Image 1 (tube, rainbow, N blue to C red):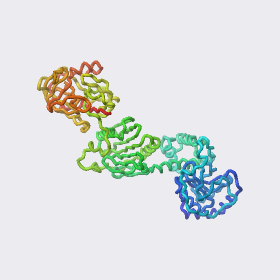
Image 2 (spheres, rainbow, N blue to C red):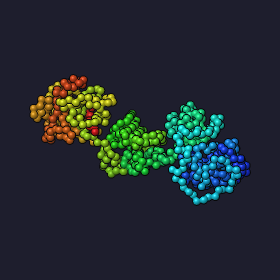
Image 3 (cartoon, helix red, strand yellow):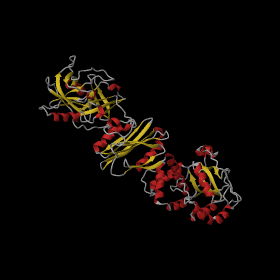
Image 4 (cartoon, one colour):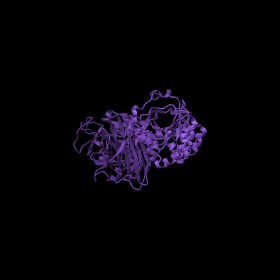
Length: 606
C-alpha cells in the first residue's frame, strides 16, 4: 500500500460522521482469530509513529505494527469477524475517511506492536472499545533490529500462507476500479521485481497476467493471475521502499540537455567536463554515472565509441554493439560492471554510462532498466564544449579527468587480405595479453622469427584497401614513403613520411633487411614502406623501446624488413600477399592516400 496521508480536517469531519458505526462494530465478543482493517503502511518507524498519532486523534482503536515485509502498518481493530471488518471498511471508504486501497487482513504479517507506545501485541479482540484517543506517552524509538517476532526467525518455507483478502471475483471487481496510471504503476512494479518484461501500457493482457501469477507464486500466494487489493498494495509498497532507499528521482540537466531518473541515494553531482556531467559515488556506494552530451556527426559518434573503450571504467569483457545512429557498451569483470547507451539524433550525441560494483548486479540491473526507460534528450543543444575545462586543452589528453586504460605500447600494421588480416612487427608481442587493431580485438595468428607477425580480427573487418607487395627492391636513393601511427592514439589517422631508399641490406649485411634514409618514430614500427608506384617494399622495424630489444639508430636512418623476405613465410601460413602491378610513379598525394588506406593502429595491452 502506498503511504497516503489524508488531510486532518477532512478526516475529522468524516470520522465524526462514522463514530456511531465504529462504536457498534467494535463492541463485539472476543474471538481467537481477530481481523484488522489496514489503512496505511510506511517505510520507517518514525513515519509510522507520526501517522499513527494523526490517525489516533480522530479514529478509535488505531494500532501500529512492524510487518514482516519491513513496512510499518497502521490498522483499525481488531474485529471478531471478517464481515464486521469489511462492513467498517465499506462505511469508512464510502465516506472517504480511509484510503481506497485499505484492506482486511488477519494480521499474520504483523510483528511487534509499536503503537500505542508501550502496548503489547494483541491477538484477540477487546471486550470493550475505547473511542477516546489513547494516552500519548513520550515517544520511544525502537531500533528496527529489535522489531522481530518468533515467526520472523523461521525459514520462509515454515511461514503459513497468508489468507486471501479477496476472492478472485472481488479482486477482479476492485481491479476494474483502477485508473490507467495505477495499472501502469503495477506493471512498472512487476517489471522492477523482474516478473514483467513487456510494454508499460496499463492493459492487463496475457503477459501481465502471467507476471502477476509469477509474483503470487514467488510470494506464497495462490497463482490466480489477478492481484487482490492487499497483494497490489504489498507489491507497490515493496518497490516503493527499495526505490526510496536508492533515492531514484527524475533529474533534468539543462547544461547537458538530458532528463533521466538517477539513484541519488547512491550518486551525487560532482562536476562538468564536456562532454560529461559526472555524478560521483555517494555514501561509499561505488556507483558512478556519466551523462554524455555533445554535438557531432557519425564520425564523432564513432570516435566517442572508440574513446570510451579505453576508459578504466569500461572493462574489456562484455557485449558491444554499434550502428550508424548509436551504440551500447557493456563491460564487466570481478570488480565493476558498466553499461553505456548513446544515440545520435539531429546532430546531437547524447547518452549515459552507469558504473557499479559487480556484486550489486541484481539491484543495479533494475536501476539500469529505470534509467533506460526514463532517459530523454531535451532541448536542441548539447553541452558547451568548453564547459568545465580550460580553452585549448586537448580532450584526448584530458578526457574529462577519467582514468584512461593505457596500452603497453602502440605501433602500426597494414592489411594484407580481404578478411582483415594485418601484418605488423613481431618484437614484444609475447608480452601482450590482448592485442587490438584499430580498437578491435585481434588474435596473433603468426609470429615469425624473421621479425613479422600476422594479426587476425576476432570480428570481421572490411579493409578499405589491401597492400600489394613488390617482388624486388628499388634502386639506391629512389623516393619512398612510409606510413604509421607515429604518435600512438593521439591522432586518428596515420602519418605519412617521405625519404629515400639507402641500401637493400641491414647494418651488418642482413639480406632480409633494408636501410631507409628517413626519420621514423616508435609508433611507426610495423607500418608499410612503399615505393613510388604504391607497392609495399618492406615493413618498418622497431627502434629501441622498453620491453623488447632493438637498436638506437641515427635520426635519419630506419630499418625495414624486405617484402621478398616476408612473402614465402606468409604464403606458407595461408596469407599469400597480392603482387603489385607494374605502373609509373604516383603523385605524393596519391601515394599518401594508398598508405593511409592500408595502415592500421596496433596496440598491445596487459
